[in-house]
Length: 275
Image (tube, rainbow, N blue to C red):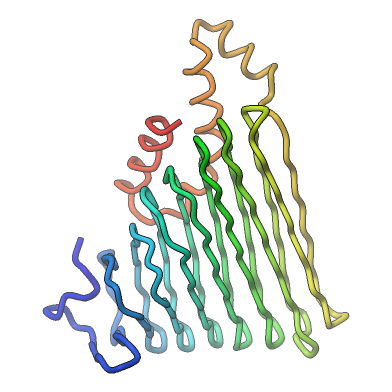
């Protein structure tokens, strides 16, 4: 998989005091990846351009993504090591789509902040997160969708599994501004807790300034289903093996949003390994 910073591929690269600006001029069939670099990066998808982008590193530098009219960014994250606060901003213009599959399986504490602005009619943001928190890690995911105009749509699905003495917090904000008629905002959060010293927090928030909209949110937090665990162990599995299978099933909903079969296989193996 080639780096999006590779100057040998047909992208426009510019660098100034504000960091690096990358403009995607035409669609790419093959996925690209964004490596860790200690500079602010702005990624611009030209109108009607399609791109698949993989990120495996968390940077404390600003990341901004601008999707012009009709553009599509299929965005995958596979986080194995994270020690920073990440801050990302996404602007989605008319009929553009941002589709995210985010797998967080790091052992570290970190804070992820994402602000997505739906700025044109038909703009769509679809965010699907699976996070595994272990040991004493403290993780916070702060995901925000702002509907600025009519006929925009956001979907947010967060799945978490917590073990040991870790803590995991999902904060999801869907803001439909006045005038954003017929906007749709949907949130769903599920967190499964394995141990008594874990700390789970789900905060789905809707801010609605317009009447003619469709908005919903749901959140569920709970202990592992003892009946499911007993059933698997009655079939000959050891307790730890049974917990791994339950965890895999719980976090699997992000797999359809991983754009590459190799990434899907890697996600499954990492879940089993790190559980």
